[in-house]
Each structure stands twice: as structure tokens, then as C-alpha cells.
Image (tube, rainbow, N blue to C red):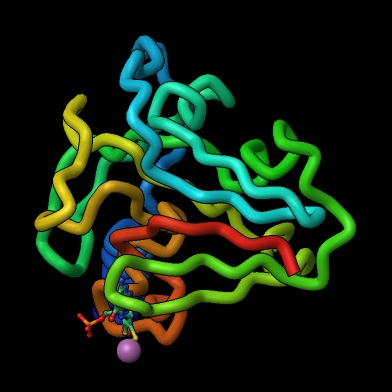
Length: 170
Ligand SMILES: Nc1nc2c(c(=O)[nH]1)N[C@H]1C(S)=C(S)[C@@H](COP(=O)(O)O)O[C@H]1N2
Ligand SMILES: [Mo]
């Protein structure tokens, strides 16, 4: 009779292992001091107006951080702001979707529903340092809660646009 417990125990351990392995990277408010770098890195177009934002402008919105490995290789403490907070801070609302454009022409569209469903982090720094343009900078979009899933090839990785230089509200 006792042996009946063994498959049960093994299955239990397997479930625990899979669960722990699938844990999402935690996103938490950061106590890092905001950047004082004033070189423009992001062009925002919304409500017929264009604005150029620096790392200092972006980070003033409120810093969050998360530690994980990006599927392109970068690993460490990703520091940035919630995309939603940036939109709110610049009164960007009433859009059907926002469009992010990368230096290489790659584009990602996000509608308000998608922005509500997950926390998109606009990454400004890795391990405290601004991200060079030849290393997926100046800005990258990540979803820490999906960090493990995209490593396994989850389709949501198409949203993880790097080299972001422009944000349009459409
Ligand atoms: N700037 C930029 N971001 C990007 C891409 C890209 O080509 N350029 N490719 C996207 C797609 S389609 C996927 S699946 C993942 C991984 O891209 P890769 O397969 O080219 O490495 O990154 C996404 N982010
Ligand atoms: Mo892709």
C-alpha cells in the first residue's frame, strides 16, 4: 500500500519543480536615482504634437526594476519605467493603439486592452548603465512576468522590441 504514495510524491515534486521553474521575474519599485542624462533618445508623437524625451525625462516617471535574462542574451537588473506610467505622465490617452518603432524599422503595436493585461517595462538601463545602441539600446520593451515564457519561445516575444527610438499614439 505504501508504494502507492511514491508515484503521487514524484508527481507532486514534478509539479512543484515546473511551477518554480515557470516563476515570472518579479517587477518592483526601484530606489535607484533617476538619470540626469538629457540627450534626446525617444521621439513621442501624440495628439498632433512631437516631443523628444531624454533618459532623465523618461526615468522621472518612476523607476521599476526586474532581474532576468533576455532571450537575446543581456542578463542582469533591468531598470526602467512602466509604459503605462509614461503614457499617463504625458497625457497620452484616447488612442486606438500605440506604435513603437525601432532603429532597424521593426514595429510593435499595442492597444489599450493589451496595455492593461500586462505590465510593459520600457527599459532605460541594465545594471545601472544606459544601454548602447549596438547592445539593443537605447530603449527596450520587456514584460518581466513573461521572461521565462519567452525564453521557451512564447509568441509574445514578438512584443519585446529593442532599439526603440519612437512612440506614436494612433
Ligand atoms: N528592434 C527589433 N526588435 C525585435 C525584432 C527585430 O527584428 N528588431 N524581432 C522581434 C521578433 S519577431 C522576435 S520573435 C523577437 C526575437 O527576434 P529574433 O528571432 O530576430 O532574435 O524579438 C522581437 N523584437
Ligand atoms: Mo519573430
